[in-house]
Length: 302
Ligand code: CP
Ligand code: NVA
Image 1 (spheres, rainbow, N blue to C red):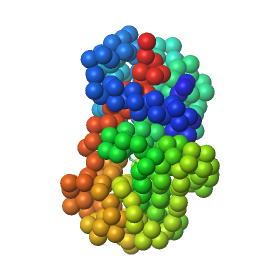
Image 2: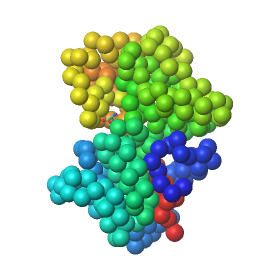
Image 3: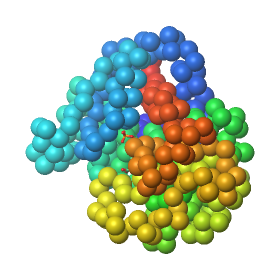
Image 4: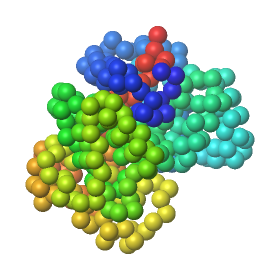
């Protein structure tokens, strides 16, 4: 493993190893206090963040490493100098780059022109760190993730893509339910379906919300992602049947609710569900740090 750009690039063994290591770090943090001793990580963020920024910063600190956050105050990435120069220069000092960018191609350029591992902290296409934390959460709840039936409801986006790849590689069953015109990227769907077939999983896509029946966990995300240009008025009526509420959870027969956060209560899910007994949102948020630390130790650990 040279970088973490997408979950798609991981074999099943690599993904299972990362989840096992994350559990190990979570349970025995003292054993990893010097895992990143003397290592520096630069974090480049083109978009806002709470969970990703804080969990990487504190996580790196807990592993004995040092991290430096760069926002766009000193010039937007690629504007003052090319992304390739940015990557080459940062590689002179840092041991890894964590990047949150609008375009996935920017992250690919950082990996191509830098000499250090690059970790995708969210792009328009993928959110692999989120996916890893989510499968860590499901494995803590259910043990064998290949037995889990996961439904994603709402806007087919970066988070959906990473969940589809993770579920496919782990051989789980996943259903993606979106309003017409808001499905995940067609190429990503084909790749994920091929991976699901290879690993004994299934990936079903539908606009029929009744297909939610028979799932263990229901996952949703914001209906408008960072960088999207649609207005709420435009999409609210279209998405209303896909809101996660008590009725939908009952039709699904689901025990758990998941959301990457930030959550917009009473929009994509009701407050009753987001803050309810079956909600895994804070376990997912906590697991961001443990999953990312497993990635850092795998890429940089000594
Ligand atoms: N889930 C997630 O990535 O949150 P942030 O945007 O706050 O980092
Ligand atoms: N799909 C959302 C995820 C936020 C963590 C976005 O890209 O804005």
